Length: 160
Image (tube, rainbow, N blue to C red):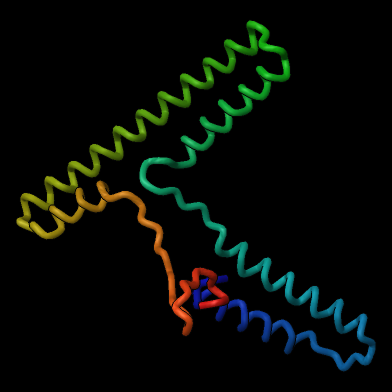
């Protein structure tokens, strides 16, 4: 809801819903129930539409399945007091997860190198140098600070 597109879509859908289903009720409980239903249904439709799963880089649905399988094996092993069979199932799931992750990382790196080679061969030097530099830089959280009239630093969003 922080993005302007999402909030405007939410407002439009809510206005449509209220215009279609609005009645002149004098009972405050009925009006409140109607508003509650309108807000939750509109929010549900907008947010469900936006819940598409996007994975960054190499991690995809297959990797997620392998990780879930490994986590379930670990839970099962813990619940069964580390029996031989449970430990073996967990080790198998863990090695499978590692194999899948290693394979996906390798494919991702190969595609990146192919793209770099393509940029180099097409003499796109700016893009060629930007791509490795982006991957090397670590995440830098933005700090938003402001001074008030007394010279005190404000870090809370409401205070700023």
